[in-house]
Amino acid sequence: MKITAVLGSPRDASVSTRIAMRLIEGARNAGHKVKIYKINEMDILGCHGCGCCRKYDTDCVIEDDMEEYFKDLRESEALILTSPNYYSHVAGPMITFMNRHYCLLDKDKNPRLPREIKLVCVFAQGAPAGYEKYLPNYDWYISTFTSKNMELAGKIIAGGDSDVSEEGEIMTKAYALGKSL
Ligand SMILES: Cc1cc2nc3c(=O)[nH]c(=O)nc-3n(C[C@H](O)[C@H](O)[C@H](O)COP(=O)(O)O)c2cc1C
Image (cartoon, rainbow, N blue to C red; front, top):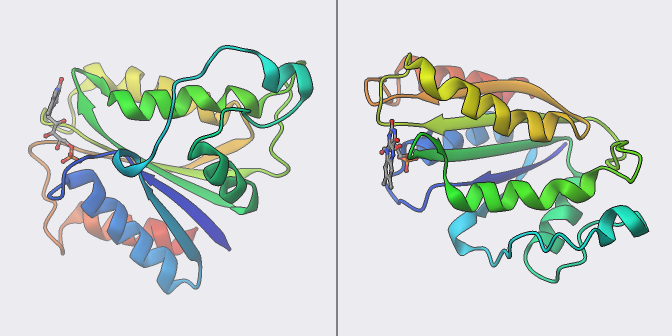
C-alpha cells in the first residue's frame, strides 16, 4: 500500500525523524511504498478560513504544497506524522499543516476521505516520556485527524530520558509498528 509521511522536525539530528525513519524502514520492508515530506521544506500557507472547501465540497483551494500532499493522501492507506514538542505542544508548522485539514469534512461534517486511513504519530519532547502534562495536547492534535476518517494505529512519545538507540525499545517498537501497517 501507499503511505504518506510528514516529518515535523527541522533538525537533522531529530529524535522524532530518526524514530519515523525506523518506522518507515519497517513499512518498506513489509512491501509498502512511503512518500516522505519534510515540513520545513514545504511551502504551506495557513488556512484562509474562506470556507470554500466546505461550501464547494472540495479539497483546500490554496495553491501550495498541500495540493500535492492531498493527492498523495487520497491514494494512501496510512499517514505518518511526527513533531517535536515546542513549548508544551506540537510545533507550529505542524499545527498550520493540521489546520489545513479542515477541508476533509464536508458541510455536514461528514468525512470526505474515500476510505479510512491508518494514522501513526511520533512526538519527541525534552521532558521525560512519562510526563503527563503534554498528553492532552498530543491527543487533541491526533483527534483532529481521527475525526476525519483516520484511525490511530500507533503513537510513540520519546522523552529526554528515552533510549533511542538503534536496538532500544522505542526503535524496536517503531520498526514493528511500521511492519504491521
Ligand atoms: C523552541 C523549543 C521549545 C521547546 N519546548 C519544549 C517543551 O515545552 N517541553 C519539552 O519537553 N521539550 C521542549 N523542547 C525540547 C524538544 O521537544 C526536544 O529537543 C525534542 O527532542 C525535539 O524534537 P526533535 O528531536 O524531533 O527535533 C523545546 C525545544 C525547542 C527548540
